[in-house]
Image (cartoon, rainbow, N blue to C red; front, side, top):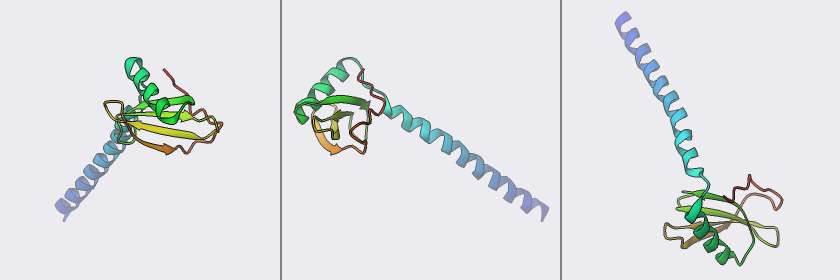
Length: 111
């Protein structure tokens, strides 16, 4: 009986350690996706996004956002916030209203 108890306790500890390790690893990997754009990627993404919206103020840019290669958040002249998603060739693949309010800068990082 002691042998079976040791196996059960050992197995439970192993599962707990794997679960804890996974819990710390997954957020670290997803945080890497939210890197602001820089250089030529920033310039091309901003130009494409602003052309799509007809203007506005860029409040944030991200690489690898929501399944897109690039994401650009723009505050429109009417105060709405939209996110423009671009593919790797800087073509618009989607645009959606952002959850941020009209006065939320969302930690602007234009580059």
